[in-house]
Length: 441
Image 1 (spheres, helix red, strand yellow):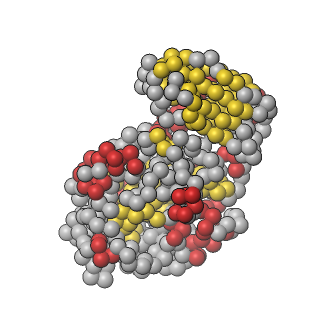
Image 2 (cartoon, rainbow, N blue to C red):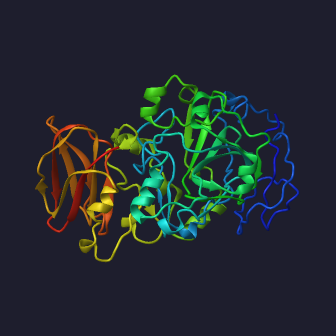
Image 3 (tube, rainbow, N blue to C red):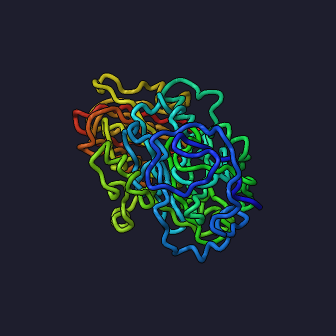
């Protein structure tokens, strides 16, 4: 199978009829693909397996890789904050060796909801797009629920929320996975959309010949969420088995059995690309990564795929208000005490078991839950701690620390169990909060 051939995209800085090796300077201008050519069948004689990566993955497992990320996948001047590798941003997203942390990066633009579907996303590498995946996981519609709840609007009719997998030419044993983007039409015409089930079973096959991209080429619009996923054995098919709970449930499936190691993009980024980050803020590469040792010394707690406490010290702020950094961002206002989200907004159409608002510490009136429910919390500052007692002792479910600044923040817990439920609130007198218990569908 010719897995390296396919239409090529172009930028003003490149010829549209040649395939170039990665440069060390990130493109200054990116444009939509307009021309196509045929790319080389192999990269320096490399033989590829049925899943699209190099055939002999085990011999590549410990090979030192070059700095192959030679363009930024998003305009950094648009970005307010970036999540840290191994943080508690979003949900558990881990490889075969770690669990209960986020081993990818979320990129939050300054106007998150305003540009949610229009933010340009570029290929960070010279390589080939070989897979597209639409939906297929328990969290597939989280983005849509969040957008509709926060804006009261629906996503554009032509937006298709997908994951895109690019095999870099200089690192053919791994995938660059771009999350939550709508690919450009040129790619959709060449790369068929697969399913998460086929990926988990290891039977998905690459597009033939795939879509060739150069670093800096426009590949879609959406969020800048990105991960680097290195395969150590198996057939190289990308896998949706990216959480401890999924590995516990589906551990014998090919997608979970194959060994993978995840990396931060900052590990493989050229100095020229990282200069774009330093042009916005005084940062180092280490600022964006929590080390294995530091995470082990301060482990997170998970309930299934969800963090028990989410988005605390999870983001590096490049510009703007650090209080708004979140994987499901919330708008901030200048007068937060007067503008906590309404109960209707927090409920988002779901049945309400209990609703409370106030300031300072309180023990809320008990309520009966006969099916799974969630607590939705809005507050204007910290410290704020919530605990739930279902008759088996109180357990902490949320912590907004003191010093996190003022500004509206909202949080929704993972599904909580049934029983006679008491919620305990610990907060300073100056902290305003609203808490709803909602029935989950």
